[in-house]
Structures are given as structure tokens and as C-alpha cells.
Length: 249
Length: 233
Ligand SMILES: Nc1ncnc2c1ncn2[C@@H]1O[C@H](COP(=O)(O)OP(=O)(O)O)[C@@H](O)[C@H]1O
Ligand SMILES: [Mg+2]
Image (cartoon, rainbow over all chains, first blue to last red):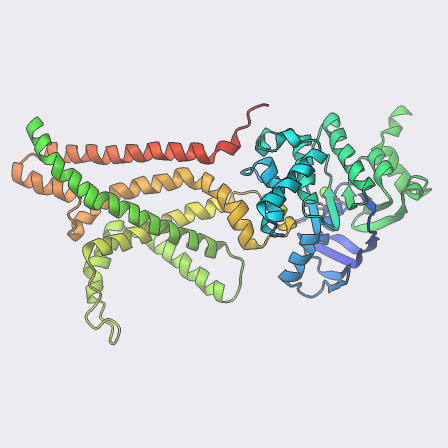
């Protein structure tokens, strides 16, 4: 279970996260929504210490970290081994073939033997529909394929949580669909996920819990039906802007 | 003229294979090791002791890039014998000319190559570090498995440039009594009074060595760039 309390992060004199407290339930999908620049990426990146918040508390299973103190690199490694990040820009390793991208973590972090890692990687590639792409280099993939490889790469670590930062924002709708289908499948298998997305139709389908962030603060933190059934005007405006429902008026 | 070429070629090539090429290759390999260490230390974000180490390496790079190679050779070969330190080097540091040459060439090319390697590491997108860190890799593993393999491809053309420069610069070793290819051409020219022919001939041999290196560079670039192809499926 992942839980944060009063998480604060400042860039220069800009407070990107302002005392954020919430929990990310296990085996569930939490979706983070909110306008651009509201702090969604910073929040997600703070969860695996790609950003270091300057204060607050971080609870992960039996770890309890006071963020106002320096965090040891072994603690950070330990957390990163159990959480995976999927980026908007995929960030595949361009010098490694697709299957080697997926095998890299299991071999060099989990120290699995090559044969086991390869067998698992092949299974994961089949799962995301890319078995036949195992031996090509990332440069030869479409965006949708690249993101599915990135998802397979994160699954190969058997993480407790997968964090996805706008995983489909760089994709055409058609390619987006193939990635969303994979994510829905993974969610169904009870993989704990935290997804930042602008796609509210997808959020509605996949989310167990929704967090709405604005100006570094949480404006809504609750279930998916409660979010879409809200009477908070700010959130209603956001939903209608995101779903273009105002265009018809 | 054909006769002069024919009679001097064996001597020139012998010097080339005995001194020019081995000195260039050995110095470049040592230089690359120095360069990699220098680049990694200078890029390290560690504090404390590393801060001093970084300053030392920065000074080293500055020193060797801001002074002429010929002067460096003279200091190491002719100057160090006068560096007399009680208890450690009471008689100064007397080096065999080939050793002095290799030390100087290694340090010189190491300084230049360290800047090449440092720049190529810095040119790898931040996202590569982040993706590797997210998997749980330590910094050492990220460097070894993800960053350096990509950085090497990028630094290959400038490193090949440095190597080719080094091959030509070994001709300066003539001035510290090494009988390498250029020195032999000078000796022959002094005997047969044909400086134009002799120096042109030795120029041709340097050019041939460097052309072979350029081919080798092309081959290495092709091998290391296989993954960059964006060919459609
Ligand atoms: N590395 C950084 N340096 C300075 N400001 C940053 C940095 N990262 C994010 N910010 C700022 O923090 C705020 C939140 O950014 P971000 O978390 O990326 O928002 P979102 O993902 O919701 O669009 C923005 O105002 C952004 O400009
Ligand atoms: Mg963002």
C-alpha cells in the first residue's frame, strides 16, 4: 500500500505540490486528472523519487519515510525495484532490441538468468500483442507499439505499482486504442496502477479511484462514480472541457 | 626517383611498424582509459573528496589542451631528468624516449578525448537515465548498460579524429630522439639530398595509414549504428 501525507515540492518559487495527502490502494487503478501544469507529473515522479519532495511523509508497505530528511540511495533503489514508470515519450533503450529492452531489468536488477528472463519477456511481448517484434530495434516501432513494449518492460519487473504519465498523449487515436486495451486488461488482472491521463472516457472505464489536481492541490479524491456525478462546478467545467461537450451548445 | 622510393621504402615502413603505429595505438588505448575516467569523474555529482578530484582532472584537461604537444614532449623527456626530489627521485626522472613519448601522447589525447566522451554522455536524453533508474538500476549499471553504449556510438567520429591526429602527431617524437618514420625520412634526405621526394614519400605513408583508419572508422560506425535505422516495416 502506497500512502503520502503533506507532500510538498517547490521548483524555485513555484509550489508544484502543496501538501498533497492521499492513498493509492493496492490492486486498484487510481487515475490522476487535472489541467496542464497542475502538478500531476511532479506527483507521479515524486512517488519513485525521480523528484525529491522537500517535505511530507511517504509510506510504502512497511517503509515510513520522512521526506524532510535525506533519503538513502538504498531505500530509493528498494522502492524503484517495486515500482515502475511508463513515460509519455516511451523512453525505450534504442540500442537494445525489443526483447532485450524487456529483459534488461530482470537480468541486471533482479539478477535472473538469461534464459528465464528471455522466456518471460517473450510471454509479456505476446501479452501486449508484439511477439513478432521481439528482435527489431525500437526505432522500427510505431508509437503505439513502443508504448506497449514499455508496458511489457515494466511488467517484467513484477512491480507492486506501475505509474503511467500520460501514456497515450503522444499517440494518434487509433494507436491510443491499442495501448488502452492493454492497460484495461492489466487493470482487470489487479495490477496496482496510477495513471495520469486526459482521456476521461478511458478514466471512466479503468478507474477505481480518481484524484483531481489543480495548482498543486487535490480538489477531488474519491471513487469514479462520485467524480463523474459531482456537483462541484470546477470539476464539471473540467469534464465538459475535456469531453468537448460544450461544442454542441 | 623511382629508385629512391624503392630503396627508402623498406626503412620508412620498418620505422612505421616499429614505432609510429605501435606508439599511436598504445597511446590511444591508454588515452581512452584516461579519458573515460576523467569524463566520469568530472560528470560525477558526488561531493567532498570528489570535489578535489574533479578540480584536479579539470586542471589536467586544461593544462594539456592549452600547451603545445611538442613542448609537453620536451618537458617530459628533456625536463623531467632535472626534477630532483630528495628521497624519491634523487637523480631526476630519466625516461626511455619511447616511454616518454607514450606517456605524453596518452595524456594529451586523453585530455581531448575526455571532452568528447563527456559531451557524448551529456547528449544522451535525460529520459534514458530516468527509464533506467525506474527499473531500479544503480548509477553504475545505468552507465554501463544504457548510457555508455549509446555515448560510444556518438563519440566514435570525434574519437576517430583524435586517433588520426595522434598518428600524425607521433612524427613529433622525432624531436625526442625516437627513430620513427619521419625521423628516418629526415636521415635519408640528409644523405641523398632529396628532401622533396623523401618528405612527400613519408607524407604518402602517413596518408595511407590514416586512410586505413578512416575505413575502420566507417566500419565501426556501421556496426554500432545498426539500431538507429528508422526503416519502415
Ligand atoms: N524540473 C522543473 N523545474 C521547474 N519547474 C518545473 C519542473 N517540473 C515541473 N515544473 C513546474 O511545476 C508545475 C507542475 O508541473 P507538472 O507536474 O509537469 O504538471 P502536469 O504534469 O500536471 O502538467 C508546472 O508549473 C511546471 O512548470
Ligand atoms: Mg505532465
